Image (cartoon, helix red, strand yellow):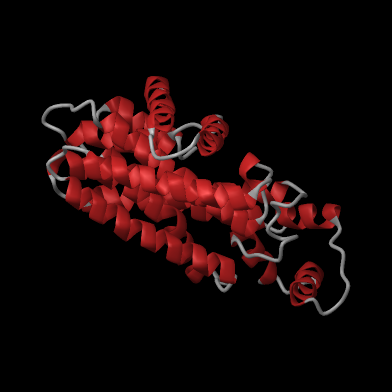
Length: 300
């Protein structure tokens, strides 16, 4: 899939360089943000392309430009997420006011590309983008409010926040190809998004910095598990979250609790449930072997 990443990267450079309605200062910011995003890979655009490939009777090269537009949208959402959470060191966090303006430009350019495309089922694809973007925004709102403090509500929240964007990317591809929204694709794509979010949640707890959800008094599956233990650690973090006392969490104690209490194993078990659900649906689909392997790979 490395070639698809290269194709998307080239088109993003071209889109940014040739947009006539933005000045050089804004163009430079967009290019720098794209360059930083490139280190993470263009997985959402790739998902769009491979699902178009699976459902199309004939391959239209313009899908690469649609995939680039999807990546612009996803990047704009990521930037907003980082600015709201304040928990990353990416380039865009350093100048939030300029970054917000860049986000608006990216969104408008992405929708312009989609609107000006000549795909027969363009309007349905735009409808899907609108629907799943709003679902993701609602999930992000719940995350910011920090109200999902049990397993069920937390999983529903990340299915909206993260699962919706993965589903959107896959469904835009297959919808542009055949004019129909596949329920099977929607289901396994949402599960892929949940898997990715749980993986990120676990990784963030391993870092004792601004991204650590526990230090930021946020909730994730391992933290929800710690709260349920009713022991000295759960009592300590309960007081820390409630700001009842001036408590400084000791890194060795927390790391030990996360590891030895079963909190990480619990989160991994939930992740694997979603992963297995997605794998079963993918394995039973008519997708070609290379694309199946790609989907499996991004869930490892």
